[in-house]
Length: 395
Ligand code: AMP
Image (cartoon, rainbow, N blue to C red; front, side):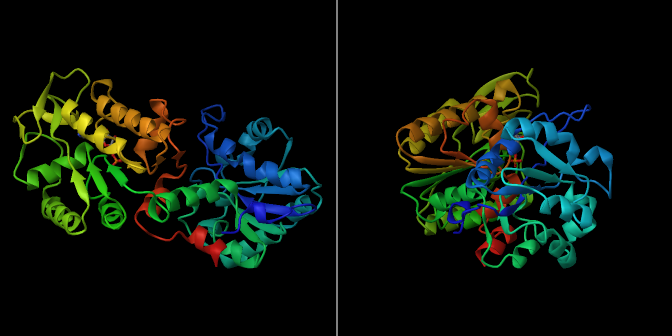
């Protein structure tokens, strides 16, 4: 895997695809700087080598040129975070941009205008990619959040940098983390899959059955399994048309020697509300009119026990409706168990959607080994797909 550490950027212009698709408030202020902060190590390494950086990104989903999606809104924030004054050019291709890139000196940063002002970006247009390629000597992809898209700046442009392309440190870290779970993992490996639906995680389950020793299935998706096994799940969320699939998954897991752990009890509520009445019930016997909205205490103890024995842990999806305080305990206890196992030396990766939000909300981000920065991209990695943005650098 070629990374920025394999290059000396002295007197080189690095064309870096970053993911600066950050949320803005109504005054165009950045409300979450995580993605900018994540790109900092790559930018600093290049500047410290004596190179210069041309940063390109998309922001939002503009239809053509729309000022509210201009990357000019984030110039001050990027300047503040990187600690170097950032220059801005109000286009991303063409002679003005080429001149701005050419006149860039050692240690300087140039931010280009939103790539998605051109539909050629999403279309993966070759000519547009070639125009972008004129701006730098070395292409660096550090945008994990868009690595699953074959867009001009994430994938197509790489072909113009034969021998001069590499992963930024963020993207390299994402790849290393998933490899630590799937390729060079220390056993036992445990995956925890939660969230609302079996259907959205089915490809992930199928892919990881070959790679894990334990599979904990929690959250809303567990009820489809319990019902398929003949349990009474009351009004809990369920995909009736996926019951057969659930049984097939359990059979396959058994054949492959994967131990599946489902919740044994739940916090049942008489309404989907934080003000609902609640009771702990056996997951096989949830009364009509009640729905399971969180893992119960016995389940939490059982899951924590499995996690304590694990050397590698992958977590995707909450164990309950953690957005409501009354149903967050299962997810919090799971986070605690993973944090404890990590402190004992296990490798833990949290990625792909709502579990990242939960980890941040409950303060576990610093207590797990790695929190992935790309929801959709990480899900596709967990599904075993190769991502075009990654392939473009490897090939
Ligand atoms: P996903 O996007 O598939 O990872 O699902 C995440 C969502 O699943 C969160 O918004 C949770 O509130 C929801 N969820 C988790 N457990 C349950 C449950 N028992 N019933 C309904 N929704 C749930």
